[in-house]
Length: 259
Ligand SMILES: CC(=O)[C@@H](O)[C@H](O)COP(=O)(O)O
Ligand SMILES: NCC(=O)COP(=O)(O)O
Image (tube, rainbow, N blue to C red; front, side, top):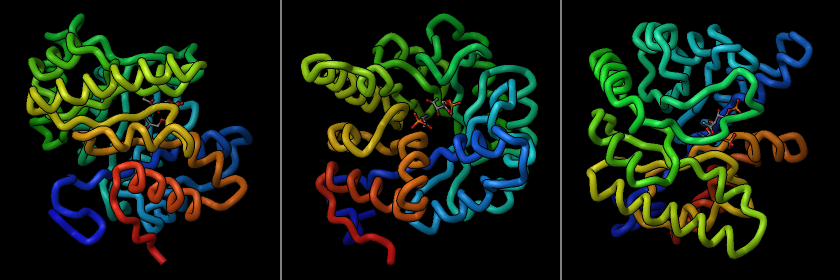
């Protein structure tokens, strides 16, 4: 829809705020604070279009109670990240978040290291996507900027993909960063050509986000670590508002910050 913030010609670019690392701070001491619920509401009020949270098998940060409570409280949209396991399938089918993003997981990883190998597990993921679609959940697959994975995502019936931007974020030279951005651009074009909604995320921050937000065809960016890190110094509401403003500038859209 064309609005003053999103003039005709460019679909609105949306921000999903990942609140995992608010829960990381809570779990560091096993306290009742900081409360991820409060973080989610502050982020929504500051302009988040969705709240992303990753229920990991090891529960290192987000807990089951966070997911259950937020499902009833969020005023925007829940994007629940999880591995494609029977346990998580049961949880997603019961809680029925608006969105569910399937991500690869290894207990020993520090954070997500790569995209889901959809091409190597078509049958499993096709069944998992059907299970979630049956429960009214929109499925997104977190994949590398790889046309083979994009084709497989379309084949298994996922309507949405999220391009892993970690290699772009971690690039050490301008040349490497430009090469990774070109890969993401081609992946967005390929995904849009398949009729997929294309999101992106992982490692995006206030310095590298504009170039990704500027890519035509990107629908939503999921950003967490850099927003929560900035919030330590400037507060979560300002951190969210600033990220949204930087994204909209990158997308060539006017920015009407929420008061
Ligand atoms: C898939 C992804 O890149 C993140 O959304 C994911 O949540 C990272 O895992 P941690 O939040 O545990 O670092
Ligand atoms: N899917 C990416 C996400 O939700 C946040 O990743 P990050 O910004 O915490 O790296």
